Image 1: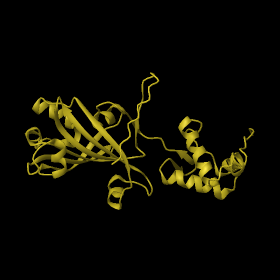
Image 2: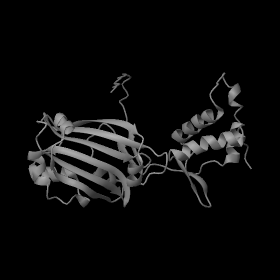
Image 3: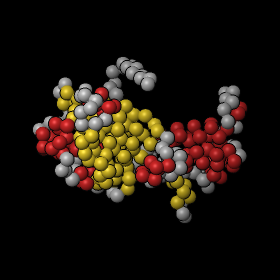
Image 4: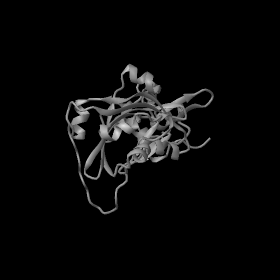
Length: 258
């Protein structure tokens, strides 16, 4: 049996007065992010020996990882690391349909609503009159048959009316928009925030208790015209957004408070 590296009691380290379970949790998150822990997650006994803490402390840290969907227990295998199935790079205009299909899965949708109706908030974002009817498309997005996101999109009526008869079970909004109107998004922006899901959303996306949801608010433009506003509630443990930045040494803080 290999030698176990033991970390001294946390309370004695650098005067850190955080709860021991929090210190264990933070270190485990660092190890998961760096790849030090990959498929197999350490047992409680291994963690007790490594961190020199009680089993109760270890179990509290592990419980919180499980509640957030980071690890899960499998019969006969112990706890395993639950990696996100889908990874999407930030800073690009992407299609969720294409992102899913490009990673070897089949993307389908269950259409909840597909109609023309007014919406004051969407109208403001699209720059049209509040009373003007807008194309409204609401779908449950699935990857290989498992719920991935609840997606709601709004378009101006002149662009959306040709889409009213489209079967969106297995097609992309942007593809249909280009095919039927000759218009496609050329730029846009997204705001991503965490959301605590209610019971209805947990049932809809098949979320375990404590699993996170990401709210992705998108505005898309074709040239100078705003052509879409969209809100997508994404299953947080199945989808990861990745950001990369240039190696130019320039720090660009862009913090927004609502």
